[in-house]
Length: 41
View 1: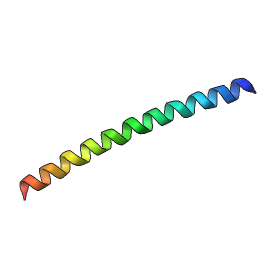
View 2 (view 1 turned 135 degrees about the vertical axis):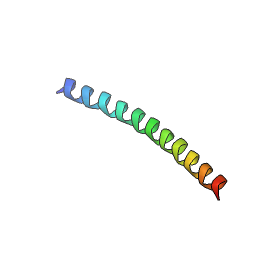
View 3 (view 1 turned 90 degrees about the vertical axis):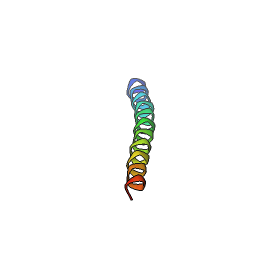
View 4 (view 1 turned 45 degrees about the vertical axis):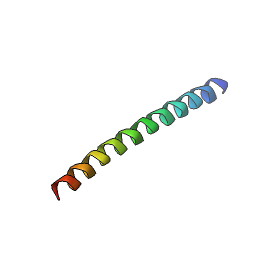
């Protein structure tokens, strides 16, 4: 049972890190699209 809880805790930390990385990547891509839209108008 403790191994299961430890594994779940490790997975949750990994997902938190990946979610943060994906969020920052999404913000960068969105800002690039917004900048290209503003310069084309």
